[in-house]
Amino acid sequence: MGDFSFSLGSVLGDDKMASLQNFSENLPPSSSRLPDSQRAKKDIVSRVAYLIGIDEKYFGLGQSENMNPQFYRSVFEEMNDNRDTRIVRNLCFLRTRLQRNFKAIFNSMNSDLKNLDSIPDLVPQETLRNLKQDGIDFVQPNRRLDAYIVDVHVYLLQHVSNCQKFIPDWVKWNYIRNLFFIQKGNTVEGNKEAARLYNECRDLFPYQAYINWAPENDDGNILRDDAKFLPILYERNRDKFYDMSKVTEAGDSALKDLDKYFESCKRIIIAVDCENADPCKVIGLLKDFNQRGVLDKICKILLVDDEHTSTQWDALRRNENLPLEYYLTDRVKDEKSAVDVALTIKFYRELESQKESGTPIDSAIIISSDCDFWPLVELTPEINFLVMLEYDNCSQAYYQRLHYNEIPFFYIDEFYMSGNVELKTETVLQDVISEIEENYLSTMNIFTIMNRVLARLGLKMTEQELAQFFEKYICVMNIGFAKNGSAILQNKPEKTEF
Image 1 (cartoon, rainbow, N blue to C red):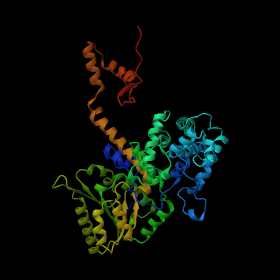
Image 2: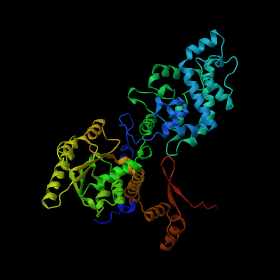
Image 3: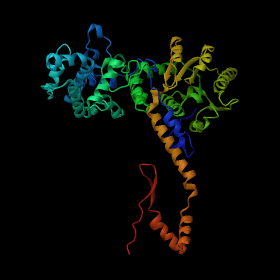
Image 4: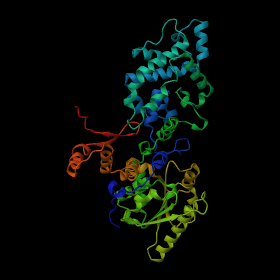
């Protein structure tokens, strides 16, 4: 079929490819709807679990009752060797107990005149000893309980920032940091409000450990794995987490499974539902196929698009080395797309055409998260199907249907997500440049401006003077942008002093 060359420059050219809206909206999911994945990592949740004071027994000590640990033991040992992380862990563990047992501790301190270090059934004494060993003598004489809780906040302020080095740079540290700080945590009122929320819905907090969080019933265990935690964390900060390749173990097991699929294929047709697939991810997937050397097995790539999204696929359509067929559907009703029907019909026509020509297709890759294509899979048992899904569009029902019927499927996000970020960045950049050039720079001519200024001032310049002025003063200037997005002239010549 020829080499599949897809450098960013040659693919994007000067044309528009993707809208800025696509850059921000076509991102992975942000809720408990994500299916369980045996390949999901637990590195970030293990680090967060350590810091917020989740019991050590969940970190895989190897006891018979804990052979399937929730968190990585190696992370526990790594972070437990650092003073700041130990302090933060012990402070969080202590704060949870103070809030959970506030009334009982308050009564003991006021009625029985006890302090925190003499109520072992309510306050973890080992935690107090650990803090003292790390230089924080937490217990003070004649200290009120509500003041102690404020003290936790103050100490956390001093030590949490020093834990940033244990969180990878690709995770937004501020979102992690916010988990430790109660709003108005330096006041008694702020901590009372936090304690009220915590005790009203304690079971919704991760392992009943207190964090600065507004839990929701459908969150489930937010620390199940990184693939669940980070999208929810980002969503709560009005953001979206998109690099799912960072939180899944796609690597060896997934790649071996995909290689097995290609080994069993002779002639493959790829059917792309352009309405329910991200063009950048599809490009990244084809790059991955090219690197595996399997593009020669692909006899046709069907792109069926809707009139509302057609411009997003220009980059892929321009590649002449791929056996592409692009079909654009229009709409009889504005609210009803015909992509799924058109793709199904063209798929079956291609199967029949190839069969009649003596080169039958034995395998098919469906790139769509739309469950409307399940009948296509179910009614063509002679075809070796592979379904490519996206985290942000796949429903739990479709995931289960594929799983129970043993139809192999993979998440596009796992295989080329970092490349997808590069592609999206490049396409948005090209779109911005095109917008500036077409709508602003194309209507601007510096000699027209100079002549207009000369006429307004009542001055004249010869052609030679104009050329010299242009070379000396205009060419050195360039356009920059202020932080608010406003255009500004840079490298302007200084005013002449008389």
